Length: 359
Image 1 (cartoon, one colour):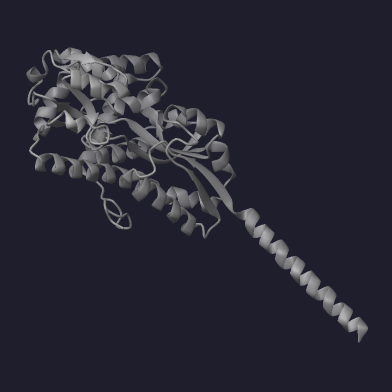
Image 2: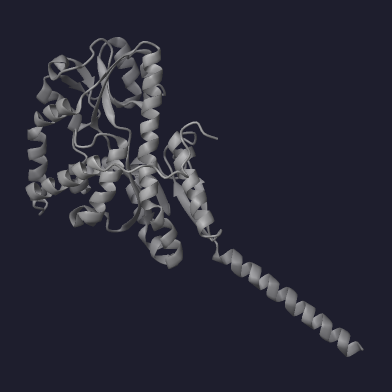
């Protein structure tokens, strides 16, 4: 009897040990990924695209992947994105602002030249297709795994006293140009470009040092620029390239089925971000129109004419690609073909993404 009891105790102990070992093994199999997001926690793209995307990945991997989110720049600041994803400081950076490192991405930058892309959704689709079909563009992303392709909000013209309907309306207007590209374009058009720190824009507008800004439409209210600006020209001037990127070493360490879960959502994530920005644009413009602001939407034929005036900008970029050992002119033609195809055959957001304001 004692031997039977002893055997029973030993068996029970072995069973408990094996269950504990299995539990530990399951815990060890959970892959935690650190995600650095510099955008604020309540940004619509964060709340209604990034976080739901994370939940989808967790569900599709049956809990084997868990995300640890660092929002609002708590892990990675905007300007640190590239180094953070390559060094492994963050496993994932979203968005990584490629536009902040333009010189390292000349082919991508060619796709994001002025009036090349019509909207954030068009940017997402063109960017995705460009990566897929243009080896020279894809080569710029060696050393990281791209999980999604999108853009910043597309910049438009927002003014205090002049509603810009034609290029001549910009003459001598003091406009915040955002970057060197904006400065170059405004000089061609006869405007008086200004570049001041972001924190100084409001006061510069207030004091008359600025007449307007080249700025994405959705954050106008957040920066209180709508207190001073009530004339808006929606031209689709230029967005900035952005991606969701994973550290390559981390990516290579993932099992194939988990990699597949990420790959399966690549295009869907890209389109969802573009669609969300478009919703944000439409919402803000509706509010501005409701309060009586003047809004002019530049027709496509007029956009093409404005683009033609910027031929020197395109020519200079082609030369820069030539200097980088690329066939600039031929590559630009291929980029424009990708962009035009995406415009002619726009994709729709998958139904499982929630619209702006949904709970």
